[in-house]
Image 1: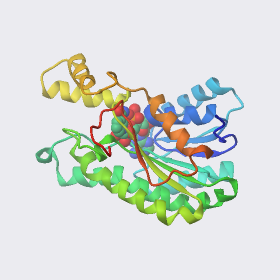
Image 2: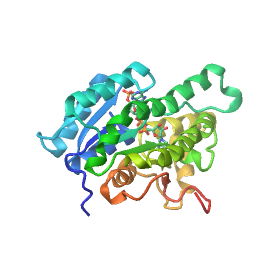
Image 3: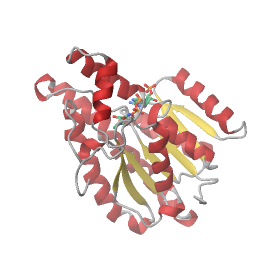
Image 4: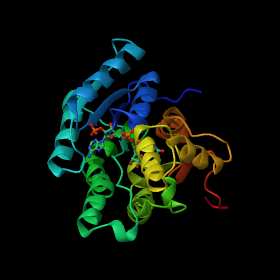
Amino acid sequence: MDLGLAGKVALITASSKGLGRACAEEFVKEGARVVICARRPDELARTAQEIRSLAGQGTDVHTVTADVTRPDDVTRLINATLSRFNQLDILVTNAGGPPPGRFLDLSEEDWRSGIDSTLWPVIRLIRISLPHLAKAKERGGGRIINIQSTSVKQPIKGLLLSNAIRPAVIGLAKTLARELAGEGITVNNVCPGSMNTDRLKSILEKRATEGAKSLEEVSAQAVEEIPLGRHGSPEELAALVVFLASKRASYITGQTINADGGLVDGLFG
Ligand SMILES: NC(=O)c1ccc[n+]([C@@H]2O[C@H](COP(=O)([O-])OP(=O)(O)OC[C@H]3O[C@@H](n4cnc5c(N)ncnc54)[C@H](OP(=O)(O)O)[C@@H]3O)[C@@H](O)[C@H]2O)c1
C-alpha cells in the first residue's frame, strides 16, 4: 500500500524512546522527514543516530531538545521544525503521561502537573502548528494524531489522572475534527493498551511493590486480561499512527482508535 508519506514532514513529540520513537522510525521508513524531541539531549541524539543508521544516512531526522510542558519550548519546537523543513504536514502529540495514583494519594500539585503534562501540551502544540498544517492542504492535507490511552474508554485502576484528564483531549479532538475539516486537517486519537516500553515497566513495577508481588507476576496478571494474550510492541501502535497520517486515511477524522490487543471490553470501545 502506498501511504503517500514520502517527503512529508512529521513532528513527533516525546520521541527519544518508547511509542514516540517507534512512530518516528515508521515515518522514516515511509520516506518522511521527521522532527523528534525530548528533554534529555543525549538520549535524543543517540536515538536520532540510531534511526539514521536504520534507514540510511541520507535520512532527515532533526532533533530539538524540548519539554512539551513548557510553553516557550513548544513555540521553539515548532519554529525549529519550520526553520529546518519549511513545512509541517503531520503533528503527532505525545508526552510522558501523568504519574499513577489513586484519589487520596494525589495532591493539588499532582493534579496541576497532570493537566500541565497531559492536556496543555496538546492544546499548545495544535494551536501553534495550525497555520502551518493548514498550508499542507495543497499537499493532501494536514494530520493531527494524539497519542492517548485506553483510559479514555475504560478507566484504568490506579491511574486516576490519566482517567480524568485524557478524556478532555478526546473532547478537544472531536471538536477540532469538525472545526478544522474545512482546512483539510484530520484529527484523530490513538489509544495504546499495554505496550512494552519503559513507562509500562515502571507502572508494573509500582503495582508489584504495592501488591508485594514480583514484576513477572504482575506482568503475567496484566496479560491475562488481554484477549490477544501479550503486551503489544511500540511498532504495533506506530503502524496505526502512520496509517492515520497517510493519504489512505483521508476520510477518517474525529476518531479514537485502540491498539490494545482487545483489552477494552465494550461495544463502542
Ligand atoms: N506504553 C504503554 O503501554 C502506554 C499505554 C497507554 C498510554 N501510554 C502513553 O503514551 C505516552 C508515551 O508512553 P511511552 O510508554 O512511550 O513512555 P516512555 O517509554 O517512558 O517514553 C517517554 C518519552 O517521552 C519523553 N518525554 C517525557 N516527558 C516529556 C516532556 N515533558 N517533554 C518532552 N519529552 C518528554 C521521554 O524523554 P525525556 O525523559 O528525555 O524527556 C521519552 O522519550 C505516555 O503519555 C503514556 O502515558 C503508554
